[in-house]
Amino acid sequence: MEILTTQVAIIGAGPAGLLLGQLLYKAGIEHIIIEQRSADYVSSRIRAGILEQVSVDLLKQAGVDQHLKEKGLPHSGIEILTNGQKHRVDLSALTGGKQVTVYGQTEVTKDLMAARETAQLRSFYEAKNVQVKDFYGTPKVHFEYQGQVLQINCDFIAGCDGYHGVCRASVPEDQIKTFEKVYPFGWLGILADVPPVADELIYVQSERGFALCSMRSETRSRYYLQVPLTDRVEDWSDDRFWEELKCRLDPESREHLVTGASIEKSIAPLRSFVTEPMRFGKLFLAGDAAHIVPPTGAKGLNLAASDIAYLSTALIQYYVEGSDQGINEYSEKCLQRVWKAERFSWWMTHLLHRFETETEFEHKIKQAELSYILGSTAGKTTLAENYVGLPYEIKTIPEPCA
Ligand SMILES: Cc1cc2nc3c(=O)[nH]c(=O)nc-3n(C[C@H](O)[C@H](O)[C@H](O)COP(=O)(O)OP(=O)(O)OC[C@H]3O[C@@H](n4cnc5c(N)ncnc54)[C@H](O)[C@@H]3O)c2cc1C
Image 1: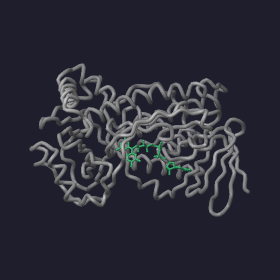
Image 2: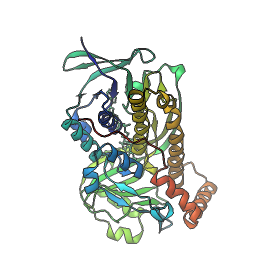
Image 3: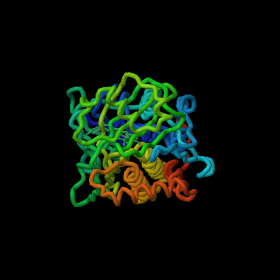
Image 4: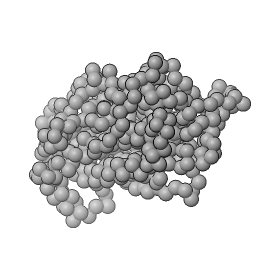
């Protein structure tokens, strides 16, 4: 068995793992990434697309914002369509100039992978049978790579391996508590090379269910429909998708909608999930490994980024300043922000989706709540503040090493 040594072993090359790797590299901290999928698979996954300002700032600090600056689309508002009428929420005006940026998770991943390749940092893709061990003592990672068994001895393990990963599953049951809510519907998403129906995102609350008109660029659109969990992708031809979307839109949007062949189509179930704590000895969980939000609030990728801001800062404090304060505070600081994003994502989901179990009374109350929110500056400010992302303090990352 070959034995390697590093300071931090990162499990998972999603946005959380790659961003942590880049920030540690910039601070001169050694690390290795171990990923079970191929690099091609990781760089072509279609997922989130909205970045909070704080995530954009973090990517800038990590030195991977060149394409983001060129191709990202800053958005200062969103539309909410209810009862056939669109209401604009002016995010910038309500939050003192903040905005969000439309830039696909796929692009973020590609930018981070390219930076990693340029810096010739160590990654093992297509690693098999990954195991994390002894994280309450002297941490080790075991895995198989190209038919060989490898062991990494390290100071810390960063569990950035998503919801189905091995890190959370390796924590003894009596050391972990989980909180979960599963929603009785999913999102059918379609990606198509057609211009977006409008300049800003449209969140649709309709009697036929929720829909979202989103985008990845000025020529690529991402649309979603609320569908029953029993539906399968094969049930939804492109034509059926566009027809149903039109039924949920207002006449003006329907008229402007450009349809076309899908280049990706998938159904994602909706779930709220939180793990407490997020640190177990020398093992840290970050991103989807520790929490899941329904995508309605556009928070999944952004929460992964804020965890990494806290974790990279904690590790830099440990190695550069010899302080374990950040490490000790990691879980608590992350969870404070995580729960607020969980609340917002749950609230948006609850407000905008049609629940089959909802009584007529509950439906009326929900309509009244939405009408109140959209008719009140205080209501819209609450929505806008959460949508653009709650602030958090991040330490300035040192300049790149040579
Ligand atoms: C289908 C889908 C659609 C989504 N759409 C949206 C959206 O529209 N808006 C939004 O805000 N959020 C969305 N999300 C959520 C968002 O994409 C995630 O929050 C984000 O990817 C979290 O990043 P991460 O790095 O923590 O986890 P991931 O991106 O899941 O990365 C984890 C990585 O770990 C690897 N891994 C897993 N197990 C192991 C193992 N045993 N050993 C080694 N590696 C392992 C995985 O292959 C993966 O590369 C979506 C998520 C999914 C699954």
